[in-house]
Length: 384
Image (cartoon, rainbow, N blue to C red; front, side, top):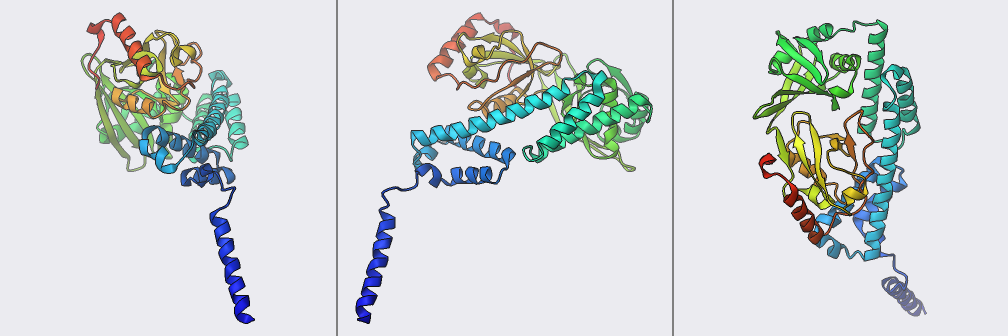
């Protein structure tokens, strides 16, 4: 009797195992993919910023790794789901960026209102923003508060005071802050050169900042390291230097990167922007991408891009100081996601986000032929 019972138990266990192996309703392959599971787990934990990154990386892997789709056994429906998740997260990011831009778009005279708006935005989206996004907002708020103190006379609000802090005589100009002369101090340690122009502070173009905001951003070097972008030259070669500045009692200041650029570099046949249906010229001195031509019916045309527009950023990253090759890489990494170009401050509204997929190879080839037929070859310089 006991042997019979043992046999029955073993048989039952075997049946259960077989039933598992032949489950008529297996879990869809989409949910079995480890990359998808990882992104879904992040979603479940309500970590929106990390979720955006996760789905974007998965989309990029699908686009750049031909073996991934086959090895993962993802169906067309599965891939559509991945794109849908990534697009939703991308739209959420764009919505956040627009909301923050509305705070920053308030006039300089309404600085207190800008501070209140950003503070409220930071508080409302505490669980949605990434650490780097929170840090960026905190830095902006700190700089505005400092600028407000400068404006009210609570602290010294002169470029001469800031110059003493950095060890230089500084002059305010429309496009930045001129390093007129250098004395022993921070800028000397960083090997900055006299007559260079500070064109960006903490990833913000100096031309977008009021004189008081520039001083506030630079004065922050007393509390923490800041980065400034300086420019010199301009005829045959333009040099940009990225300086790390920390104005301690014993200053910690150094140049961390130097880039040499030709004054202008324009789109070539293999440039990624051609896949979007446009060509542009990168004007290094002003740090803008000036649209050259736009092909009819292309993603760029549908988004409202037109010739002579001047873009200073791609998806929130300023292009000033980068090589054309670095800009190409930035653009290439975002071709399959939503793309947004930022225009110079004070110009007409930036175009809509480019959500359409890049053009096919034949469409791209036809677009390039049309661009090449209408351009002046004598204007084109070698891509750095």
